[in-house]
Length: 383
Image 1 (cartoon, rainbow, N blue to C red):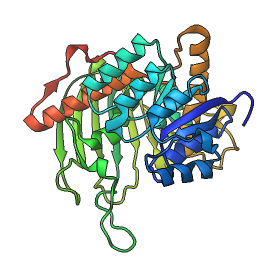
Image 2: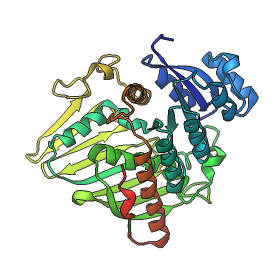
Image 3: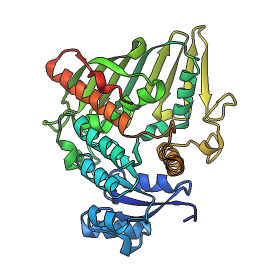
């Protein structure tokens, strides 16, 4: 651990969790953070096994988050909340009340009303909150943002964005049905599918354009093995400045392990980025010319910066590196917050944008139930 590393504690995120190992690796990749304490699981054996594997001292491993927050006051620079989404609200608020800066795995929570509770707690305690939307950490996604905002595509007309997965219909190697975590098989006012995937797509449109949804129409389906949950969503949304967006996300699209794809169309050009080819950005202009930009391209403004090139181009950086970029930014943002009481990083996202996304997803659910167009509430554009 570097003497300058920020000290981190995990709540949740054991070796058995879906995201814990990724957060642990990403946080420490650039030596900006060091994992020093945790309540990784309420299962004692799993809690201690995780701590031993990750080199966390036994005396700094706790049986529950409340004990950890009390014992670690003034010893940690931030806590990371990695528990199942339905438990986030109470843990995040408790951490803010104890004075901890908080990093929370998306989705921030399960409803806009609970997101407002968290937002109020951040404001009341003048706290620091960062929600991890890790796909914005890809260097070529950040390059795409720069291209859009620099006007290279002209006036934006439409965005098609999708995240198809196959996990709720794909058999395992023995021919058995998938076995998702039990909490993922219960829907709330917002389907858990939307909390898993839809939040990323909303956030990506906001990240690239700063546009806000005005009205939408959506369709929800169940195609997979689990009959009581939504596992596929399609939506058309009309955004500010006459921008139209098409969303598709689901977990029953066989042949797609995680097919995040973004296609942006303007009146002077278009751009496409696909996560399975994350080092490449394809641009078309209105004269029929096609450009393929790679991380080694000399004309890039962002993606060829030293911080995004842990190894030379031609050796692809991937999901965990993108996550590490995000943790790098959160470290910078927290340091700025400590020094000035605020942080305006374009790469770090708090309660406002999380709340806006949950309002959008609630409106999608409402539209799918009523089978009609729905306008978003007037006060939903709070990002």
